[in-house]
Amino acid sequence: MSDTARNKQLVLDFWASDDKTTFVTDDVRWHLPISIARNGFAEELQGDDVRALFRGGAAMYERDRTWEIQHVVAEDDLVTLHCTMHGRTVSGNDYHGSYHMLFRIDGDRIAEGWEFLDTAYVMERMGPPQ
Image (cartoon, rainbow, N blue to C red):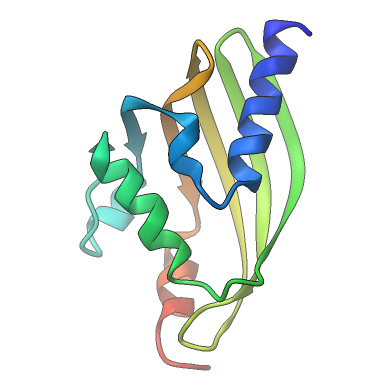
């Protein structure tokens, strides 16, 4: 298997996993949109704060959510993933959010991630049932 194919598979395995923490380096860095920072989250996280984000993010949605993968593209140590989550928030709202992620791979782990999403939609859906 080529490095590119291995990197793509790593990202797909990471995305499908309930325990994303096993796929990242100890000092992983995660970049969030500026608009997320305006809503009380950090714009850039590292290490244990990234692992806490993964654990806390899953708690915002009902467990039976699904992911639809539209595209996975890799070049060298970078992999991009375009996907949509379908589910319900714990506040009771239907959720169909699109994401575009960029990952930097270091060896056999994810070392850095950039998350792009419609933050206005996320905040709207996290609120009271609509």
